[in-house]
Image (cartoon, rainbow, N blue to C red; front, side):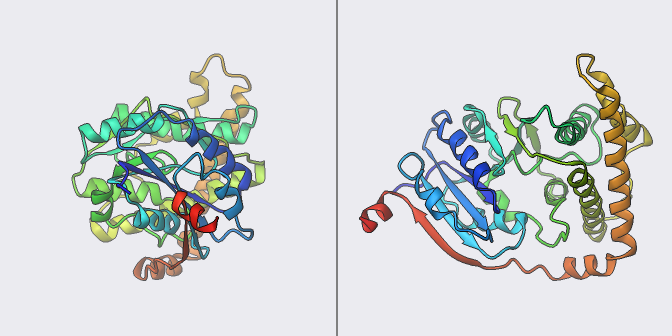
Length: 323
């Protein structure tokens, strides 16, 4: 069997309904020259998803990796390690790609194979105020970095593509960030430290549906703060840098970002949630600095990539052996 052009890596943990929707979206992708494969990495789910994945094997070329719980960065690295494609495309289990997502990324990678690419991520839950606020923060930051040339441009790991060779050259995602957040920022920051280029691909869009309550919203942004500290520590080990890299206007305009959309409902509610998110992030940052900074430093010194428990190949040859 010839190797595909690109491998789509999807980490998942205990979200069967979401992975089902993601696979449905992947089954509707436009054709890619040379084809693609999908590597699902089950990161220690309490219930097996082998039956669920097997149900798609007649429509999609899927491999399932089952590994001990280690977090999303380790799961993505495991998927990249098993990839047969020369390009890697990352998407999360709670995201659904638009039909042109993968073909747009591959087309750009064929033109600029040494680039790190990312595309837009749209909120699939517009009636959930917490999901809307979280997506607004990401959208604002990415727009800022593209237009202002800020100090920390990044792509989120739910819509990111890169050549497998360069991914391995920069050692993949950092698995030592204890909060399970920030590996996208750290990866992009490390990528830029090699003077490697990045580019946005507007046609490579995914829809992100992550339901949040107020408590989960605050916890998420608290963990973002913890992740930001880890990213800063990693960078400072490499080169002198500031802990707060952007001007005050960046954070002020972030809070007021919902006011730009004149057709948006509940604008002031969204502004309040932007303030709450930033406060939670600050608390998470200083909590990590005051309470578990020694643990952060120890984790950064000893990166255990974890072990893949087993790889389950679901393709026509395996189906034939089962039959």
